[in-house]
Amino acid sequence: MVELVTKQEWLDNWQINRRLTRKVIEAFPERELFEFSVGGMRPFSKIVDELVYLGVIALRQFSENEIITFENHDNYAGKTKAEILSNWDKLTEQINTFFANTSLERFREEFNVFGMFNYPIIHNLDYLLQNEIHHRGQGYVYLRALGIEPPAFYSEF
Amino acid sequence: MVELVTKQEWLDNWQINRRLTRKVIEAFPERELFEFSVGGMRPFSKIVDELVYLGVIALRQFSENEIITFENHDNYAGKTKAEILSNWDKLTEQINTFFANTSLERFREEFNVFGMFNYPIIHNLDYLLQNEIHHRGQGYVYLRALGIEPPAFYSEF
Image 1 (cartoon, rainbow over the protein chains, first blue to last red):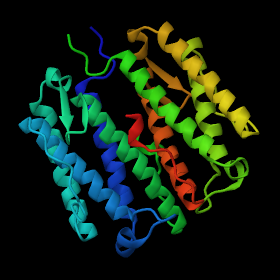
Image 2: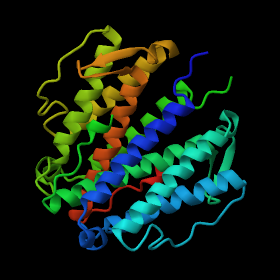
Image 3: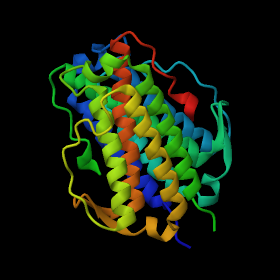
Image 4: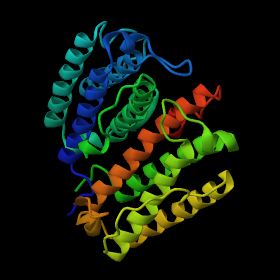
């Protein structure tokens, strides 16, 4: 039977998106990554704290089949741009390992991630990806407001 | 065989996202929808012109199996908020009809949409969805900069 989207394609698409988000992190000057924002929103470093925290802790819950409560994750991704990029890359490897070790059937099982979102694991992963794209779009506005050209969006597709 | 993502789930997820984007359009005051922006970017109405144009013209290409060249689409979605919302809803119906009338096999066929992106149709649709989420995230920053509370992101998931 034909599949609409294979596991490998889904993973490849996420990692392509994650490489683009990494470029957006890199495009911020060190100080502005932690301090600049628009409209009273969070600086981009705090957004990345959320993305890394959600990714790491969700994968741990799926792998160990145990709910972990959502917690404050300030500085979870790191206190410097170099630390953030290093943690970003560690998560890249964890995601690849999770996909390699997890059966298609497991992706369809419901799991109540953070005790808040009881959906099939693939739906929860879909949310993580969409949340990342949503916040990355906000990072583009921050960069434009700083007079910095962001990486091309379409080039990664 | 288990499927990672079914056609119906993919469609439902897109339409949930499109309902959220509709709420973001609605949240803009009439004038600011067409005039306000941050960092020299486009006003949100021009972003919606792009989203509606890409959706309508891509579906036409997939359905008629004929490449249409990408064109200027200023005001394609409409010249007032009411016109934009009406065209948004027309596209909602066109998307539902396309999914209902299109076989799973067809979604896997490569098609060079706009003569620029030669991928399986489902990949091209995935790009449209991701492009929408990316730009909607930018609309959230515009709303925050205007002092307007945007619709909750997670509530649609």
